[in-house]
Length: 605
Image 1 (cartoon, rainbow, N blue to C red):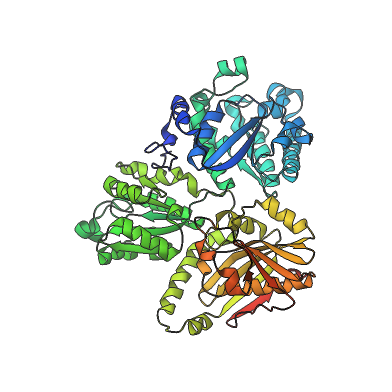
Image 2 (cartoon, rainbow, N blue to C red):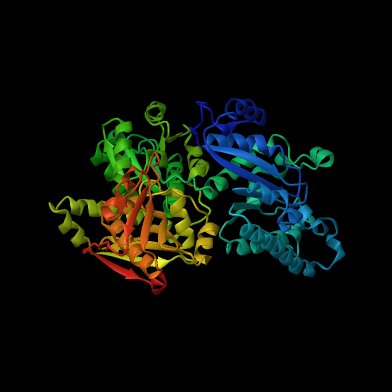
């Protein structure tokens, strides 16, 4: 795997931890571990084997990602007892993130040591039972802690019981380990805060002998070589970033020697390298990998120094182009400097530059972006074409352990946004433009369908977010279960398409007051009056709950300036620097006339 270069750092410029050996981590950790910046993060490690050497490696990676981590390690192979005992040190630690690192050797020792003790046909039922027990343990942990839980799946240590015949034996250990993993994945897929780390795939990719150290195992019950821990953490980081809500939104691509080989303006559509033979097949496969990211909800954009006509002719007409014009949410194909173009792209897409990854083959252009926008991740492409297809797999900030329907449709949503902007430019009157959109907004109480998206929005939305409180799926479920709370999603569609769930509101009903705990909306729909409709709806809902006053709170951050003034514009009065009130007996918040509201009955209960 080719690791992405240019990861952002804290007070340590120009280091790429993805390339570090174990001792490099120790050396660089000393320069950043005393930093007081960063969001506190409590990490608990439950384990069936010795894994303490992971701490300095994982600690540095979390520090560089903007966290201030503290660690707690459970006892050796004590993960069951520590989970079942609600008075254990695990629960006293109150982790934000739990890593459950277990192996088949300890989870099912008889499976490894006494496989011949029972008929092979009985093992399938036993494997499914033990996998179910592990899933139940994780479920219990998730109910007791408001934490994200990442669970290591199983891999077979070396060849199976039947030797080289084992992989094709219908009752072999190879098949049974996969049965264990499938059973575990199916069970955890139903939970809201637990995720599988595909350790089996990691071992197969890296090679068992490259990772394991028999001497370390027999001496200290640590199965890994010291050199394996950086590789372990490199593979684990995408899972952690996703679990912690650190997902990039957009990949900004160069064109020449990036999506194709050669120069559009010099080589032309017939002369560029793109096709079925080397090196054109490398660029084609690179585009295939980017298309997979697009289909998982990552936006693609273009920032290229080129004649627009030459470039678009290739994008539209070259028979071997995988990515077409419809796949790009925005394009800047001109001769301006790329830093200025990047700023314009961020404005058009209404996202922060820190949500972008810039991909370019030119080291000068990469350095220009790094200097202009240190918050932006920059990937300098390798100069060997055969390395290109592996590059997207090295973007850890674009992996997502949850995929919502909105993610799948995100490219279409942004193309609809461009069409709306084009229509808006033809109208001189904003009210006429808004009426022409034929906006319909749906409000539903949070349920099993919407909770993943609601949690995702709380973790990712920065601009129109009044309090920027981040919640896990389990925490959203706790609001749903609380009779003193109302949590609902807001969806939007218009003549140009369906934007899906774009808003969230969580209310806490406390006697005469209804307190708005969370009020947020995707930046894609700012300026259409939906925020006014949300306020009017929650005011009406609060009245039905017996509230006399609606209370809003605005907690300013570095990014939520667009949210400032929303409550006052919506009809609430500012009573302090952060608090806003509306007297529900004397004030009726108005619904925008250009929006049709559709509410599910349970949203009005």
